[in-house]
Image: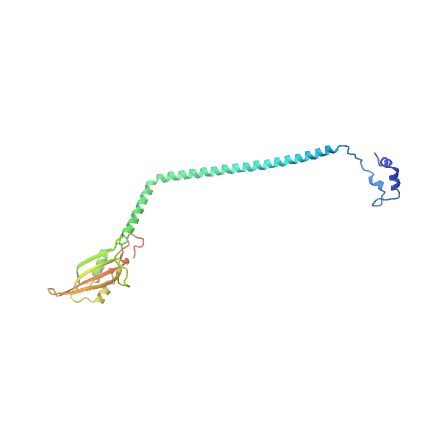
Amino acid sequence: MTATDIRATVPDEAVGAGRGSTARGGRPSVASIAGREPRVDLLPPEVHAERRERAIARRAWLGVIVAAAVAALATGGAYVHQLETAQSYLSAQNETTSLLQQQQRYSEVRSVENDTALLEAAQSVGGSTEIDWSSTLAQLKSVLPAGVSITAMTIDSADATESFAQSTVPLQGSRAATMQLTIQSPGIPSVPDWTARLSQLRGYVDSTITSVSLEEDTGQYSATIQAHLGAKAFDGKYTKDGSK
């Protein structure tokens, strides 16, 4: 249908009303519908409603499919992660089993090492209060005055199980051993001189001349001297700091 035909179908009233009047832009209002293809929708509203429902259903099913795909991907990822974790756990178990087998192969060596460590610990504890008396007595002889000899000696020292008896006199040093000496001297022993000489002993704490007597048959003086040694007198040969 041409524009002429469309114009011919317009009622006379509309044409009369349109004469002399112009639409926006200066053109007659009749010209505003010229050139358009006329369309008439003869479908009932139910058809359009059904079409809309179908479109909504398609979008809903699409959403369900997308959600299912996402869930499937998540499930697959979790399954893969589970497989990797199980593989790592199995590898760790195999490594642990291998280490245990190796430990069993060297169990005797470890037992010997433990026994050796136990013996060393026992030696360290038991020998922690040992004093090298051979060296100490040799040092004592070297500091004796000329003409002085030792006629008797009593030694009392600490052990690993019992503490050594300490002096009840205030301000006296801690003791670990006591040497009680009986000496013969041509003269009366001098306390300062003996103190100076005995102080050269390893671990020396203090000393006392407890008694002095003259032996008439020999003309010699007999004296009893008590010397105390401290923890520095320990030889420490079973300890790490054995160089005291």
